[in-house]
Amino acid sequence: MSIQIALGMKHCRIDIVKEECTPAQLVIRDVGPWDKFLTVTNAAEGVVEFLTGLALLPPGRKLFYYDSDGQLDELKVDARGQFAGFAPGPGRSS
Image (cartoon, rainbow, N blue to C red):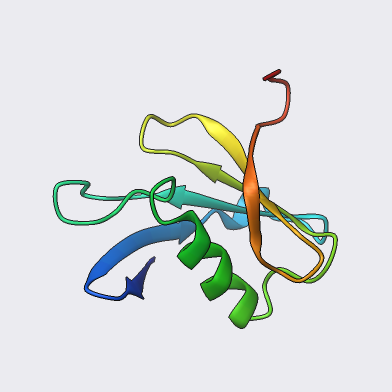
């Protein structure tokens, strides 16, 4: 099931990858289509705000996402539940 996130006049679509989620991490997938929707990368602040508002990102839980190229990376979330940047996914270096 895809979740559509309204970000002003634009939208982003994600799937929650349930089989990879744990209490320590939430994993989402960018599902596009990118000619109609923003990528998670381009909508990172809004995606984090939306997921935090649903109480899916308690303090300390990491947020990973499969980007539009299928690459697993991290959206960094600060202690206030706000987007704080990008980091390479597990097993990758910057």
